[in-house]
Amino acid sequence: MPITIPKGKQRSEELENFKNEMVKVIKETETALKIREENKRKQEREHDINSGLNRARKDAFEYIEKDMTEKGVKIQDLGEYANYQTQINNLDKVYKIRDLREEILNFISKLGRRNPPRPDDRRDYPPREPRENPDRRFPDKPDKPEIPDKHDKPRDKKELLEEIKREQLNNASLQKLVSMSETRINELEEEVRELKAQIPQTQKTRQGIFKREKQINQ
Image (cartoon, rainbow, N blue to C red; front, side, top):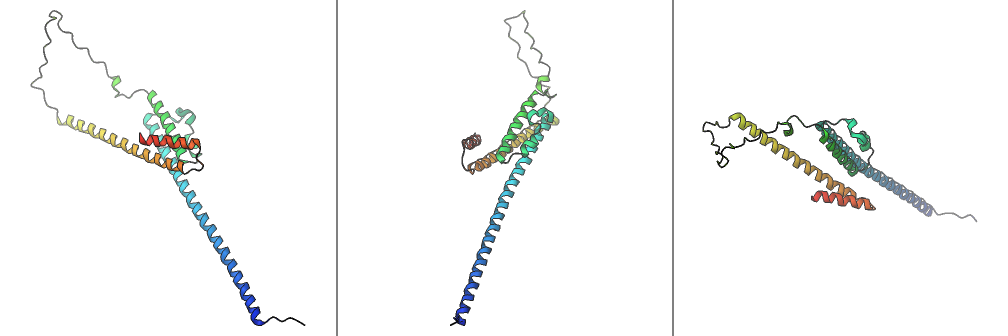
């Protein structure tokens, strides 16, 4: 005797199959969306990292080129750092780039000290003439005190302006030094955060953190 399936039960099975297919499609869609969102966040992180690296490289090149120009150092004078651009581009961490930058700047600073002094260096000035000896015929006679000339003229406007310019130049140099110090502190703080984020924490990483925190507190 053939078995017949009621129409109502048949519709119920088709509906169940439809529901299962819909659930499957929804789950696949959710998985695809999660993967796409993770890839997007990963790309954003990589973009931020690359942006930070590029900015650190650009700053390093500008600092090095500026010091080389000011101290008259040529690329062939840098020795092992002659290909500093390639060395910096090959580094994958901001703090590594800045460490190498500081090494090169210190090297340039030492080279600059070997250069001959500038024409306005005080060491080029002729020695001062020795003071005249007192009259040996009267050894007990004290030297006459110098009497200022009543006709000495006060400093003219040009001399005053030159003094003001020198004072302004000193203030500008001080402001530049303060600005550079603040920039370096910000860089060190950023490097400390980057090092602390590394997992696991190796001995070299902890030493790097300690070194930079010490420089910040100096």
